[in-house]
Length: 181
Image (cartoon, rainbow, N blue to C red):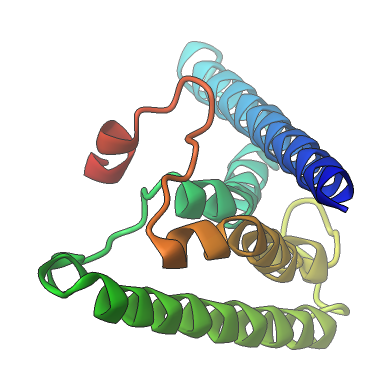
């Protein structure tokens, strides 16, 4: 029975690692696309005195998606703004209660934002963007998708967070630097 538990824990760790890698890869693709489109658009505007009509719009939409898709990775790396003085000043058991309450509040917040994001995207499905003439719902879909990813990240780290265990940072991410940004 202990072997079965260890196997499940190992499989969950592999799933978590792959999930984080996939989330990171998606962010890299979105950021690369945003940088290329914005750079080329600015270069054409100043070098050739013309630019893509859709460049600014695409850059803005990609930035919206980046913010929401990156929220989960920021959560697990401690890069969101947080005040932990109360938690640190409490005894171990009380600190766990505070961390459990925080995790529960985050869960409720992410679910509420996801539901509202779905509703907002649905209500804007017939509005078209100015330059590309695509449905604005595609832009706003980043919110519920990002919140779903944040829920998944929270699910992976909540137990360790509540117990005060260390959450292994992503490869190459300095937690202190990430929280200072």
